[in-house]
Length: 425
DNA sequence: TCTGGGGTCCTAGGACCC
DNA sequence: TCTGGGGTCCTAGGACCC
Image (tube, rainbow, N blue to C red; front, side):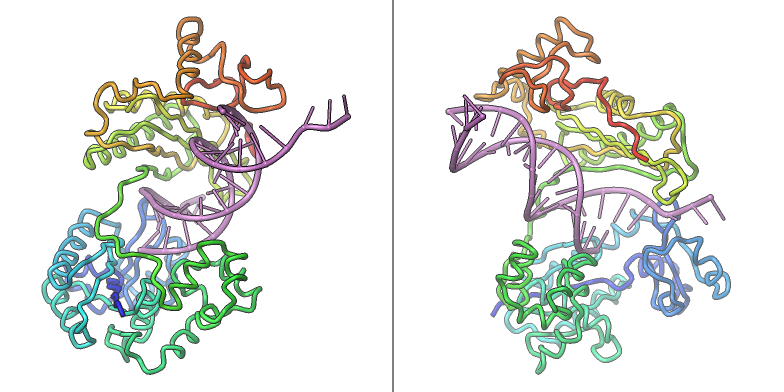
């Protein structure tokens, strides 16, 4: 039987802060999200004070003051660096590793790997980096996750190490795990499972697979198999290509003017652009969105988004910014209190793949028609007001071919800039 | 008053093609 | 008034994760 381990660093961001400031040992520590809005990492001491994960900072001010909780803004450069150190040590100790997130990794284990070796590994990483972690061992990723959860929840007993594959009563562990403690089961799926009488991981493991399939699709079926020791999720030692890169931020105080939004968006575009260049990628698509404050039920809500794909890759920051600005102007409406804006670069292609000319090639059966549309508009129309677009949607469709001023957003080729989403209230 | 940011995968349904 | 069916592509939205 194959065995996998899941390594999950304890309170990772807080632990990183402690490495660089040992005086924080034994004290309650929290690390905040961007904008210092929410608490996203808590030390054990902070958890013991009842500070919940994800809590807004302002709701916790009292307990913070009362117990002298040490509060930090997040420092992702530091965390990324610490993560790389931990991962590089792990990589040397086992045949293969999948870095799953900044603070987690799946390890492929050699046959002789036992709890004692797991403890030695834990000690080594702790000594070399100062970062503590828990390690769970199972026959599939799902079960390794579950084992890790048990190790963490019962640290006093387990010492942070738990091997489900060699435990005398694995069903007891599953029976102690509520479904929403399973990897991939959140609030909604847990509710759906509860309706079927499935409350624990053990219930799930013994459930009727066809009922699971019916209610939860392939996702549920995969979880069911993984729980039963049938591996469906392979170890991915090479990180897959990025699908998109997003950059967004909330505003400290609400913003109304287009100019301020443009300024913020320019920042986000610059950051996202830097990021894709670092990956050696180019964007052929972009999405821009705006959001009003969703917590203010008393205020009118308007959270539009708009996307476009291009027939060639965007290269320069200036070009990306111009595109983002265009998109922003199309969704912007005055009179709203905007709380957040952001940009997503999509349809990423690698720079090597994207030699000049690639996007000029005619794709059989489709693009030539659209090129004609483009060309007509280029010659006859203001780009903000295409005279012709491809017909595709709506009852006013004229035959099979063309339609003037379609409301369809098919920004790959043309878009009617006058047809914009109405404000939602 | 304040209440994050960045991702992935899956599904349903429309549009389109033949 | 009748007016197919199968396949593919695309998008929006849901759900989840860290």
